[in-house]
Length: 109
Length: 115
Image 1 (tube, chains in turn red, brown):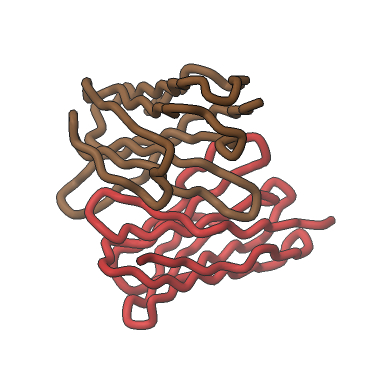
Image 2 (cartoon, rainbow over the protein chains, first blue to last red; image 1 turned 90 degrees about the vertical axis):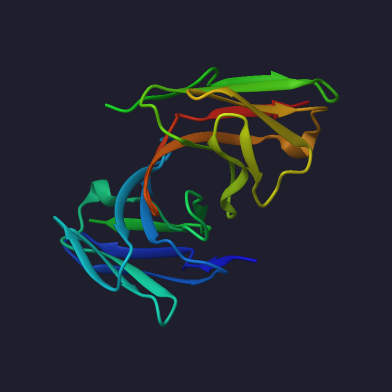
């Protein structure tokens, strides 16, 4: 079967840097994605890694190491609006997305 | 903009009722998904469809069935609703580009309460 592990909660102050780790076990691998969800809202796509390395999108970066079955999302220059849940999602087969339990990021002033 | 529309935001049904949750996407995406979201458990895949009339079970298909008669529409059916199916249900769609799973677009969710 498939499993994904990520921390349940991270707290940081405005302006700080936060790293959310995700380790996975899957029978197949077609990429690792990250999604953000604010309270009461729908998940929205942040980034995708299909190959090893770092992908940067503004203040957010995502990293993948396929040999370690590991990835992370890096949130830089934290802002209050970054308070949300963050989900890693693995694609174990073509087309399918399976999500982790999510990490609640709490940003304090 | 891609739009994924779920037919209801809130739904209250009685135990034993047959419940239909409808989802429509307007971007001609091949893939459509139904997830349920419960606190501390993240998003769990119920069913996945990669084409019209094609479906695959996800992690928690028991008590659910799906229908995809047209590309833009994916329905989730609770054959006989039970209280443990009280949850937030999220529909999503994505475009398949070769072997790459492009981003999933989510609807706003249906909060289903079974009493």
